Length: 386
Ligand SMILES: *Cc1c(COP(=O)(O)O)cnc(C)c1O
Image 1 (cartoon, rainbow, N blue to C red):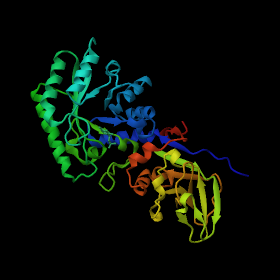
Image 2 (tube, protein in one colour):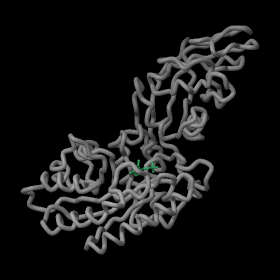
Image 3 (cartoon, protein in one colour):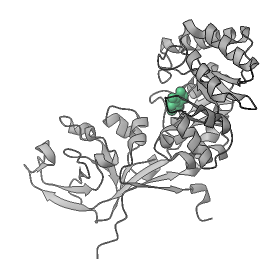
Image 4 (cartoon, helix red, strand yellow):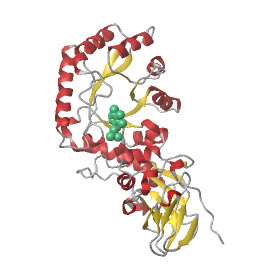
């Protein structure tokens, strides 16, 4: 009889998120700002925010104002910072919800002052200085003007400047000279802010890699994303503090077939069997966020793998929209066998980091893009059975 086939899906272990937050807090020795932008790096923003808080994260952070408001709408309380402003950003609603906004220059501060007019209490605003990433943040030449405007707004009662912060470009390469330059520039900005009378309670610079690898960059808090989800922020560096990947992606094996030498697989016939083998059909593809690049045409030995019965099974031929074919090497696992697409090492398959290496990207992209037709469920390995 054919066993029942569960659908492909994403399982997120909230106990792992909680434990990772706890580890990061203990390692850094300063408060943790858990970054839950982009739907919690694909893990689910609200559930991960709550789990991170339970693990001791004092702050949450999102990219957009809209994400921060969504946390509040879901009932998430506590300090929340956001930093990506756009034409639709509702500064007034954010202030009303007790969210810390980020200003990247005088134009942001002017827009915020207008949005906060008539508020009975000062809003909470942090300043981002650009120390060398050249993304957002106030460039060095504007710091004096920005700090003066920020202080004037404090005196006018528009806001309190609760934080000053910046972001590294190369923290996953701890020996990169830009790290020292950026940290020094940040210290310069803090000193200049002080001469303008600003006394921010939260000075922060470090993301996950810097939080673990660069103690001098920890200041008053660390702003960690990828490490909260248990993934290595700087592969190859000394980052092993016991983080556990929270996401496992599984699918059922839905087909097994025999191939003879010369049989070619999938679109473009980019892989051809050179000996008799068996292949399995796994019902996930780029519609679920599986990178099409994962089959590595031209370098099939480098193709991403999945785990079946504890064995690694390489993808063969082009990744399709809805399915991939994997090499079973002559084995015939029963239909419905669990295929571990990726997860923690204990799940018996590859990790998101393994996929990142096969696809010449970073684990951030692998977990954040995964989804499509797959549903996400949460488990709590600590609470199992309770
Ligand atoms: C995404 C992001 C982070 C988190 O970075 P990780 O490397 O995932 O820890 C921190 N700060 C800013 C500004 C970010 O955009």
